[in-house]
Image (tube, rainbow, N blue to C red; front, side):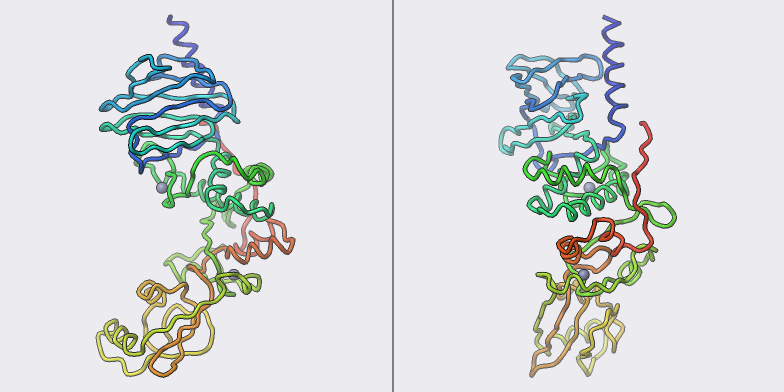
Length: 375
Ligand SMILES: [Zn+2]
Ligand SMILES: [Zn+2]
């Protein structure tokens, strides 16, 4: 019995070592799962109960887990097995996958790669997908831009998503996982299954990540369309970053989000300016030259604030008068820092390689594989 216990621990240790390139992603938390069924889709799986007991599972087995206070009740094919504090669904195969079917009111079925850790807290199951980083990246890309068919563009997204997760690996440090599956981190609905080009893009970029000139992982921010010019990071946020420099972009001018127009009644605009200034403003502050600015030319009010207050698509616009209306002619969509997505799409369609696209939008950066250390 003791020997079996040692072997079990050794087995778990080997698995953990094998998955040093794993990350732990909290999944489906917003659905507050209380009961679920697990089944295996590919690979050999075991279930570990509190690191003490190992149960082998086969393809046809149905595992039912329910939250009971701070414990998880485990049933296999309708037979009660145990109450445990930590249940781990583990496979040594990097291509393994399993299905989760949430039961009761939050019914939902999803497929995830690799391993699953389950705990219970106040009668709710806490699910953590321990997943190989590239499998996670492929899942993120399919969740976000699943039907893109341009391989170089998918490679750009693979490198950016990988860079993002490695940069933000401590975002949930206070909790017992590293990344969540919502837009707060990156949207992740599980295994990439439909667009196989995504797997090809992720695999062919290995563990390539973007580093700055100090060999730090960059903050790989992006936006929909820069309107022809990206902006320096300090023009939007307080921090200046060597790799987030203004770039003239001729690639996005035909993009869907390249231009916008908004009309505002003159009286509403004048009221707004006066309220912001705390005194009566006599003129509407019109300007017709397109130039990336951080504030209105006639009065120190930040364009970032105006963008938020008026729900504008960008801070890149002119203001002209037409009768009792003010016309805001705008360019681009988004904050304008880092990579312009519509420009990147056009570059990929024109035949640029993913390295060229990334180096066009991020200044003085290096692309090389991230060096993992064994956990
Ligand atoms: Zn998060
Ligand atoms: Zn652009």
